Length: 232
Ligand code: GLP
Image (cartoon, rainbow, N blue to C red; front, side, top):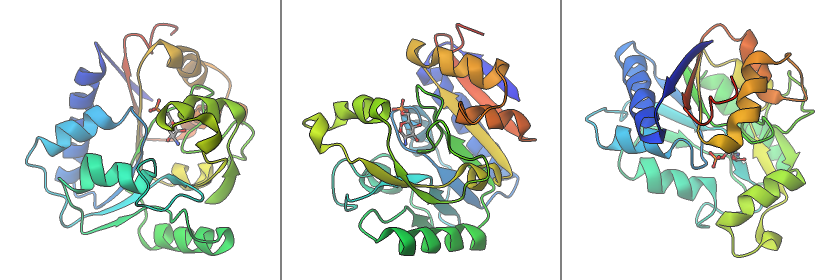
């Protein structure tokens, strides 16, 4: 694991942007993308740059089940807002939250099989989840339907009018799917991620802390701000 600790999330966004640039320069073509507040500074740096993704494919990690892409809290909507409307890709895939689970899982795994991910960006849940793979998810899992944990529902409630509106299920790439990416960037900022960061990097590799599996990936970069790195 390469670990890059910078002052704050703005500096981290610049560092993340540089990795995207390096990947593009080296011929990477398929980009695995993430949502959440963490990647926003990286996407901002990308949209402010002259990087050109119009010949590239993007594949997002996850989507809430039951939300259409037009819903303001759907991940498709988020991606349109923060990236695709400003930096279009040739084709952008996000799981379809309105599709029935079995059909959607099959469809999405086929997309990934046809477009193996060169570079995957990840955020980190406070409980160590990646994508929507909560603690206990099998390391060899593929795209699947996930029941969100209480803690994830509670921490995502800030984006909805009230907690009852937060979807209880999602479609997510599995941990095995994520580990197939040729290179991975994980970003984490803020003190409330410090415990998960410490366990991910220094703890045992265990399904109780999904991100700990990254210790076994041959090409991972972790970008942290000082607060998220404070327990290392
Ligand atoms: C959600 C997403 C994850 C994201 C995590 C952290 O659960 N499914 O992909 O990494 O939240 O979100 P944030 O970056 O807002 O802290």
